[in-house]
Image (cartoon, rainbow, N blue to C red):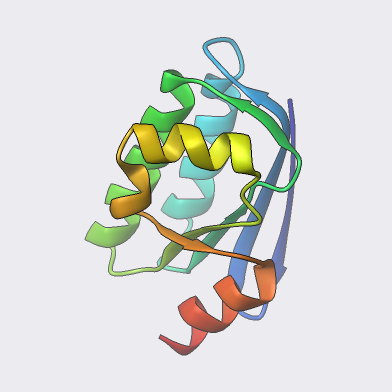
Length: 113
């Protein structure tokens, strides 16, 4: 798994590629939490190139969302492929996470809101 990251419009965008599973969730968690802990700034996860998301990956998403909420900073997903959206939906995450169709919509919602 690889995670591309950059700053866009005052938010951090992280784009994981490949799989977030029991093996790769730890490095992903470390990268996400280090971004979150660097200061209260909105975080967008662009999941366009995410092939697989396990329960371990879901746990990392939930941890990130909770930490961002505590810091009163935005947290959103975007570009979620249908098979990943199904995993999020079955787990109930579509009800608790902000999900946008594309990166620009997520950035507009978080930076403006």
